Length: 300
Ligand code: CP
Ligand code: NVA
Image (tube, rainbow, N blue to C red; front, side, top):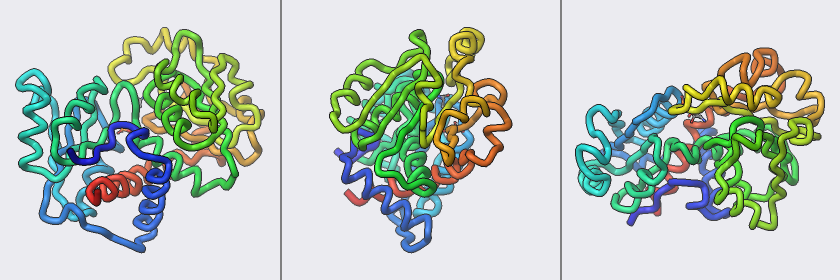
């Protein structure tokens, strides 16, 4: 079985830093590996995307490969044929599979049966490429022994991904969310079991951002849940990232959002376009980090 990247905990802490090192070298053009030369990579999307689609296509191209954009209209994953069979067939054609879909178990099943690396481009459970790129962005902008990171908003795939990263790297992670929009319990427990990271889950946004180095937010209703936006807005409105909330954070704090943003809902224009915001650096780093992840997996 090839090495896959279905969630951050598929890597060790040392491997996470190996990927960051590779990422820095590729971003500065110190190295330009072509592990996909003469090969194709399949990019399966059963959900919408701007950043993930374009950054993977460009990245695969820069690694020497050819990218195939495949939507669920064609393959009807698990319906037209089993995920097992899709994994076996695709492995005969391509050097790597990237998948964005709803059920996380579809990605782990694909990875189980594929003989080429499978990379998770977002599931309902986690978005590991995003949080790897985000942590790399933090390292570029801010030097601290241990970061105080405040995630505010829905207990969704991004919140779960931060918890996964906290179970590998020491940090002070505060999740500010309502009791009715919780993170995944198993992921929370695993992160709490790691003695190195301090994890706080609070429904008080001020407690979450106190002296924070990073304030992170995401949409309140994720893809597949857009019908819940009014309910989530009612539950989460006090977690909006706005100028008043920033006052309690470190004076040089970074404001982050994985995008796409619903401006005026989870984050104000003033903050998103303000001096603390690094949201477009995060978007750019998706390209560099995913290239590093693909090189790392293909070299195993
Ligand atoms: N952040 C992110 O994954 O963006 P897309 O949904 O546009 O790919
Ligand atoms: N939580 C969001 C992230 C989008 C990149 C979603 O799943 O829609």
